[in-house]
Image 1 (cartoon, one colour):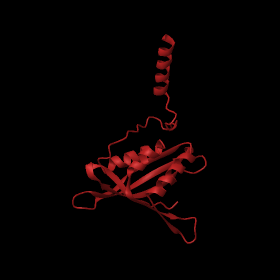
Image 2 (spheres, rainbow, N blue to C red; image 1 turned 90 degrees about the vertical axis):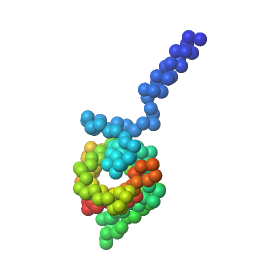
Image 3 (cartoon, rainbow, N blue to C red; image 1 turned 60 degrees about the vertical axis):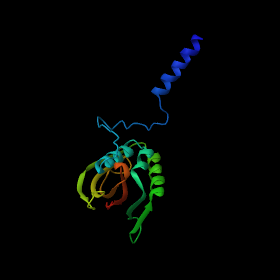
Image 4 (cartoon, rainbow, N blue to C red; image 1 turned 45 degrees about the vertical axis):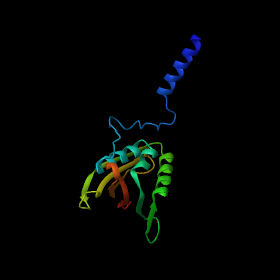
Length: 171
């Protein structure tokens, strides 16, 4: 009976200490602290966005996007340049593939360039963010520096969600 108790304690300790579903930590992250927020402000959403990319957490990422979410970008690999526009489901699938493809991803917001409330009740805000995005330490793909425009909406319960993300970068 003592053996079963010891085995049970060992299994509990092992399950607490080891999570096979957790994303691999970026060894280059240094002392940068990543904390999830309750998304009670537009800045909280940007904090969670950065966390989702840096820890390749698709569950956190999907919770950032409103059901009406639209992503807009340009495809500079075509002549003439064409628009890329997709909705929430396609964006989540694409982001999950991105998270799986790269060993490490490092997103750093360089700051908010502009934050404008678009409605009188302050329930819709436009934020222009600068960013730096590095894949696998920049070994194969150079670090990307760019700008993005986000429109966020306050939902019931005071939770903010992204309704539009427009990549303004010209890589």
